Length: 356
Image (cartoon, rainbow, N blue to C red; front, side, top):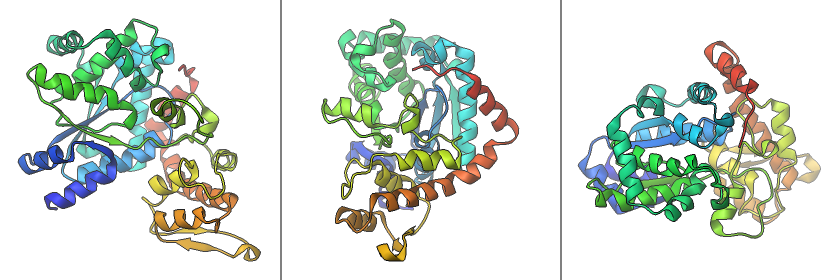
């Protein structure tokens, strides 16, 4: 695979790249650049954390990237997940790894790291302090979005540590690339700014799309506030599809989902078709009675979106098809999670009380 092919594959993952020119240079000068993503073990994983994350990581690996997945258990601890119970957080992290294996992530080529294995190193905490010294309190509070919280919700002193730690992680892991969601953009930009000032480097930022929840998007608010409110969230269980959801759960949730007629933008049902279904199938069949035009087959997302935008597809027909395809994706994963170590961890996590 040449540089252009590798770059094109990575661009399928990155909704925004800071910057494409720097990424090209990195691919030209380093055979296997290091990318990292940190995940906060905080409850039952949904399809964006499971299925979509596996899709994106596999693309990065195929493009020749060495990928490090970071179980940010101490970060979740500072953010009061599971009521601040570190042991429960770590069990949830172990379960998420089993979910990724079940989703087909090439885990043999992924390096998994726990915060617990890092925080005992004095050099790590030196990085955290240096970043804190190079930042203002207001700047760190504005990074509250990375914790799934608005600035006004950053109340505990422990939450001030979180962005400083996450920024330090990048340099601790010698990551050339930060490959996280768009909701993590602020801390990645902070790293690009403070890195060179502290004698380190400016990482390339590849931000992937945040899959929408099934609820209607807010009509008001800043772009950042709307983006945070729209993303799939464990704190809104009826608007998220979880890896453990039954086929009936999926059908029920999607049937109630926001899906306005002829609207393509900010339509979660079409998003699932684009980012999940067409990543798995070469064509999508919408089943309809003959009196409503009969079955319709689409060979690309663009073809599907165009037909929907002009009213050739009814929202309920689209919903029924998307629910069926999502269940087809989830069914083999459900079977893998229903036995052995995965099932044991799943049952433990299910017994925990999830806190925001």
